[in-house]
Length: 322
Image (tube, rainbow, N blue to C red; front, side, top):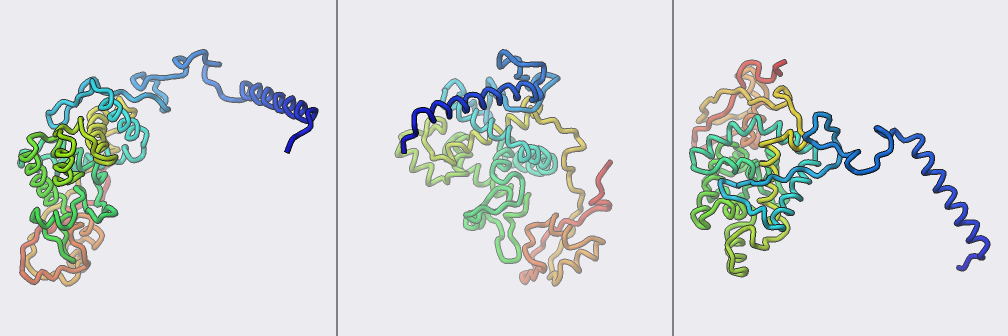
């Protein structure tokens, strides 16, 4: 529908006047810091500044970074931009990354020595962070635990997976299983970066892409959205964890989640009721489940009389140190 010419003139005149008034009011009432800035530099505060104000800024990209001792080719624009993307995402996803830093204080001391004794580089602890956020997560494909292990893969790696016991939820045993997978992948590919990629994509999937692309270098391959981002996400987590303040994360030691204090008791018989079992040790069902998430029922039939090490809380287990 066409509007009369005079109406159009009046309409645009009114619109211009309203816009002008809005701009004037913004200058009068908005809480500008230090007056009107004439350039971006006047309102931008570097994260390295002692007067850092949280906001949107370009996060620092390391000049050099390695994964498991293998250098990342940051001189390639595509590699640099891929790392930049994951650094931006993980830096500005504040709540999640703060929780990751807190949980790591509790669980890295469990994971690190297992990696070391198996000859797997320490950087793979960041793979566990990328996989599960250090929680007993269950994925849509039913991958489970810190290391997100599928049932069939878990059984192949020697984990017990039944209705009553699922060792994919057992931090120590699942870490051992992950080490087995990663070492076998390393033997196949000859480098840890591809071993990490295969943990996400599967060895068969990696092998098909190697043949298709006639390449065996992760940074030179097209591996789909998820696996293509996978190693870069691990690298971003590593960069942030190794220098959290450079990315705007300031946590005191008291903010970090403490290691859990417990002892182990050996059980080779039936536990008919885990709540009753807990009461014998002056604790409760909830705490036994927190310490032993691999116990999947409220009982343990244990018909074959297998010996299980069950974690029992030490005195003052739940007390927070002030």
